[in-house]
Length: 272
Ligand SMILES: C[S@@+](CC[C@H](N)C(=O)[O-])C[C@H]1O[C@@H](n2cnc3c(N)ncnc32)[C@H](O)[C@@H]1O
Image (cartoon, rainbow, N blue to C red; front, side):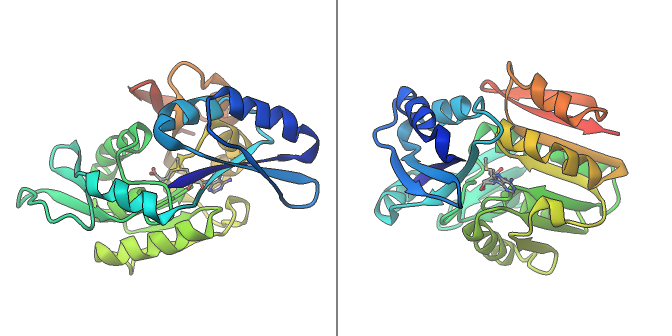
C-alpha cells in the first residue's frame, strides 16, 4: 500500500497531525525527518481521492510524498487492477495482466511497484489526454516529467512520439520503477529517470509535465517556468478544479491555454 508522507517543520507537527486525523485517516506515525522537520506517515487507504484532494490544500512548506509500506496489500490490489482506457486507442495496462488490447492500440504497460501511478488517477488520465494532441502537433519534442512516480507519463510520451523524456522524482523508488517501466515498453533508450531536483535541471524542454499536488507546484513554480522552452507547453495537474488559482498565480506570467477537468481534478495547459 502507498503511505502518504507529509514532511513538515517540527514546530507544526501537531497541527499537521491534527489536519491528517481530521481527514479520517486510521493512523498517523510521527518520525524524525531532516534537521528541524518531522515526517507524518499515514496510509492513503480506500479514501485515496478524498485524502489527496484535502492534502492538496495544505500549506506549501508541508512537503508531500508517497512511500511503499506493505507488499501484501499491494498484491491484493494487483488482482483487481484492470486496463485503463485513456482515449482513442491509448490504454494503460497493468504489466502483469494479459488482457488483449486492440491490434492498433497503443498499450503502455506499467507496474507501479513502490511508486505512484497506475494510470487510473483522474489527474494522470487528464495529463495523458492533454499530452496526446500536444505531441501530435510537434516533431519529436523533448519532455520533462516532474514527479514521474511510476513513469507512466514519461513512458507514454515517448511511445506517443517524444524524442526523449527526463523523468524526475524526489522518491528514489520512483526513479527505479520508471527505468523498469521504460524497459518494459522498449523505450529505455529515451527515458532517463533520476532523483535530480528540478532546481538542478539545466536546459529547457518543449513539453513539461508536472502532476504533483498544489503545495509542491507552488514551491516549484519558478523552476517550472525556467525549464519551459520559449515555444513550450507546461501541463500541471494534481490540482483541484475549484481551488487552483494560487497555483496559476505562482506560475504567472505563464498564460493558461486550456483547462481540462475530470472528477473534480484539473489539468491546466500553460504557455509563455
Ligand atoms: C501524484 S504523483 C504523480 C505520478 C505520475 N506522474 C502519475 O501521473 O501517475 C506525484 C509524484 O510527485 C512526486 N513529488 C512530490 N514533490 C516533488 C518534488 N518537489 N519534485 C519532484 N517530485 C515530487 C511524488 O513523490 C510523486 O511520485
